Image 1 (cartoon, helix red, strand yellow):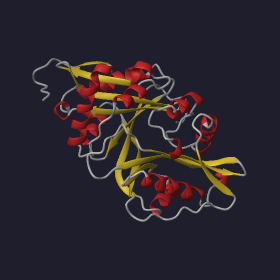
Image 2: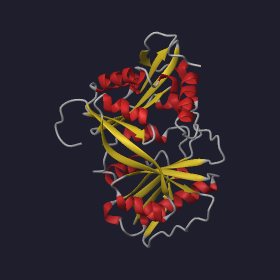
Image 3: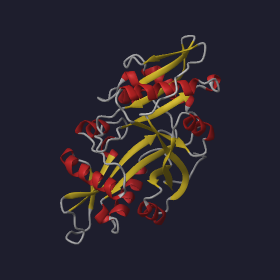
Image 4: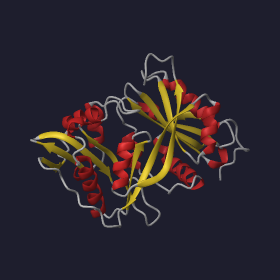
Length: 320
């Protein structure tokens, strides 16, 4: 067990491959304490994610004490919009300065990017994180919902609107199509930045990417929307509920309100069920009532409230 009484003040450093096993133990200790389903992330996941374009060694930070990681932070970048960091603090270290030291380093490193804000997601039940962030000048700015549906039930049939067709991805050939679609359908969405071709190619090259779970909708041969799901082998389920993720669902403005989004979503759920998934989750922006209504219409329910806390890294030059 980690004991904060036997060591000096923790040091903050970058993640090393030799940290992997201890970081996984740290994550799972946090999940257990926070009543979150346990997960274990594989070597491939961390190593591959560590190579995400534009982040280099700053993507992962470790707070080390007694030669063991006692806190961990990752970093994602929504180009031109915001930096996003998640935080894991070992339950026995939550009353100390570990979290503050780790976040202070994140804020310091954030000055090397063009983005003006740093956002941290917190589950509504993680009061220790909320208190820590508020004490450090972060403010609550948004609620998202993690929604979940049971795939063991009979699913509605996906009805593709007349004039549209669905096809699965060709991973090497669809990188430019996907980049253009992502930037089109999510333009103006809260927290979304500009996605570049290098970033999309990185995601398509991940070992656990399945082109059969990236489905495009087309109208007269032109892309109209897409849905992207993941069955991530980096997460080993520890309960009978094997849960997949519908990470992206988007339809171009000109083709909305025709049932295309519903058809794409139901296609994704059917594909996940065939793979043995027992549940599926997705995230939705709290104020996006139309998207939430769509998800509820096919059986999704609110599962977790995710609260976003924001720190201004420098004087704002415009709205984010």
